Length: 244
Ligand SMILES: NC(=O)c1ccc[n+]([C@@H]2O[C@H](COP(=O)([O-])OP(=O)(O)OC[C@H]3O[C@@H](n4cnc5c(N)ncnc54)[C@H](OP(=O)(O)O)[C@@H]3O)[C@@H](O)[C@H]2O)c1
Image (cartoon, rainbow, N blue to C red):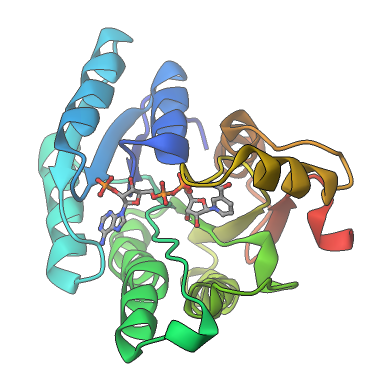
């Protein structure tokens, strides 16, 4: 699939990794739909930057953990650009949830945003893409679903579901729509991580460094434009973290 002229929806596309992917896609000529939940200013700045690069762009506020929210993003994208070619299921939460302080709500929130959101995206955008005769969906999971560390139990349970979700929808939507996932390692640390924690994470990574959002953009570009013969795959982009 050619990215230039395609319409790509990026959930959580206003900040951090989502922002880098949104801008990278715009740079290659895609129309970008930047979904956000609370970062309105940042979303509109990303849209402005995309438009300044000469592409179409739209910011859509919506909570992707509800069917209504995902339909709102899909319908706004269709109404502005005529259809959606690609979806990047990037939006996520990453709350620290130590075992001794867990609440039932921790589970519900993580499942809602980190698993139900991408599920709704695969389902509702997937049907739209199938009807149009083509499409690509990229889900974002986490290297840690294979080797989980402590204090993030509901996050990893939800992110683990994305691996199955990816294979399920790859099969359901074949041969028309390709569905794959990226499993990032340490790329952008949470703001509250100390310098020593970040150094320890780098030390525990075989390539001895933290990755860069560009690594995820390049993998996304590969899945969208570099091949039309990969579906149901989960690609680690983790500096070797999974094998450490
Ligand atoms: N950062 C890393 O090193 C790393 C490592 C492994 C995996 N990942 C995965 O890579 C992806 C991007 O990571 P990140 O660190 O850039 O993510 P992030 O900063 O934690 O979150 C990205 C965006 O998700 C949006 N979001 C949260 N809940 C939402 C909802 N209910 N509806 C719509 N949007 C919602 C937020 O939008 P608003 O700001 O508008 O509220 C936020 O800006 C995530 O899927 C993450 O799990 C990241």
